[in-house]
Length: 69
Figure 1 (cartoon, rainbow, N blue to C red):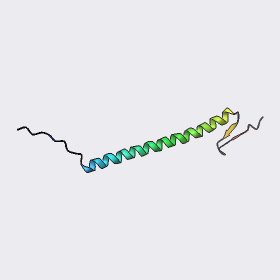
Figure 2 (cartoon, one colour; figure 1 turned 90 degrees about the vertical axis):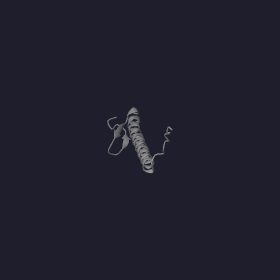
Figure 3 (tube, rainbow, N blue to C red; figure 1 turned 135 degrees about the horizontal axis):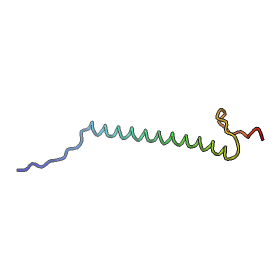
Figure 4 (cartoon, rainbow, N blue to C red; figure 1 turned 120 degrees about the horizontal axis):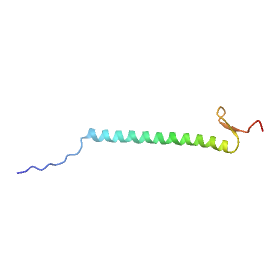
């Protein structure tokens, strides 16, 4: 008689490890996305300032009107 192979479920530690690695990957991806959005907003603020003909002062983190005009 031929024995049939019956697939067994993964052990509990393997399921927990898979869940942990997936959660870690997801959290890392969310942090990276948040960091990218913050950088984009900061660069967008500087770009808008320069497009309006003003000067961006990084020390005060604001736009200032060109004092030479």
